[in-house]
Amino acid sequence: MKKGDLLYELDPTPFINKVEAAQIALEQAKLSNQQLDAQIAAARANLRTAQYTARNDKVTLDRYQRLSTMQNVSQSDLDKVRTTPADQRAVGLGAERADPEPADPARRARR
Image (cartoon, rainbow, N blue to C red):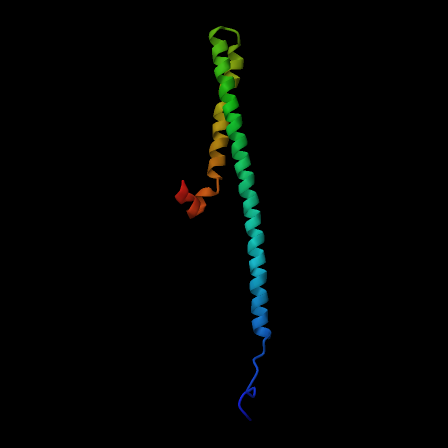
């Protein structure tokens, strides 16, 4: 034996397997993150839709109330319009609870 001779060689298989497993775990995490991003985008879109609908219902209610004071709309129609904003507020509250932003500490700090 002389200087520089190889004394022993480690089997690289376990290390290669660990690297491959880590790469697979990383890819799975990336896919999971993409799915969560898509869910966040959908929840935000649903929230915006509920907010726009609620605003529209508020405008409609205000219009019906003005018409009601002039007796240009039936009480039944006014009652129907009055129940709609309450329904939308309930939907809006559910959408706000589903908002994923508070779960992210960095986003929470910016609020």
